[in-house]
Amino acid sequence: MPFIPVQQRDHVSTYKSLRSLFEKNITVNSISEVLATCNIGDPAQQVKEQMASKDYDVIGVEENGMVIGYVLREDLREGSCKEYFSSFSPSDLVSDSTPLLQTLFIFKNTERLFVIEGNRITKVVTLADLQKPPIRMLLFGIISLVEMHLYQIIRDYFKEDSWKKHLGEKRIQQAEDLFLQRKARNEGIELSDCLQLCDKRDIVLNEQPLRELLGIDSKSKGKDFFKKLENLRNNLAHSQDLNTQNSWNEMITLIEQTETLLEKCENI
Image (cartoon, rainbow, N blue to C red; front, side, top):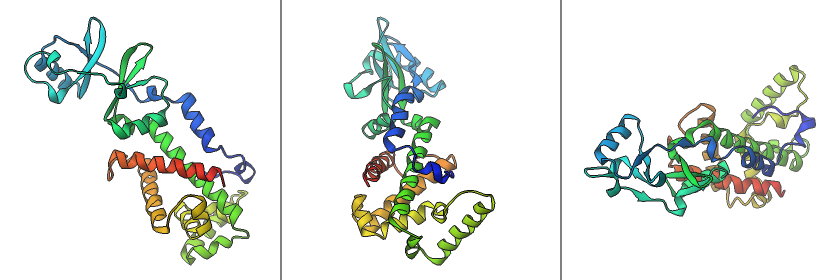
């Protein structure tokens, strides 16, 4: 987590402020692609070959100049595209102003979304687009804010470094070593600034009143949640595939749970 001077920490952006930033400035358009189209009467096999050459899995289908549906490359055989196209359902469509976070949650129930600009369907978003930088920025920002909130909770709840009782000697020593390095650079910090996410996790989970305030049922469930969150953070930090070990649904569920945790943090 990036260092934040003591005098600024009390003014760290709240979760609502962060979410507002993404809602106002970063929408589904930041990860969408222009929707390629074919005509409803085009030969299906020819369209399939064109899609393969451009690595398209889906394209729009036009009739009389309007996009009325879509075809999937894997479905196309002989005949015309009319035989294979699917009409849009309401759940397939989102406005171009849809917030990025909301877009992410919608993908829990679909593999693609089509974007409406004005009264026309012009763009498409697929699961592959969830790997793009705007999504990564959003997720890393959410995880960083979890760390900031945990820091603030530990600072308020544990006086005079009494949190040490929940960590082993090795973890305390690592924090103290980092503290001395930073102090040597004249950084205005406290020892608790030098705790890692795993340290903050253990400190909070070992206090039943804090677990209850954060809506965490048990230590084991809390550790499982934070382990997944750390893995996601590491994948983000090292530009790894976001879906390396878990399904997209599991990752999205993790972010939903993180959103709930942050709302609990706001109320402590």
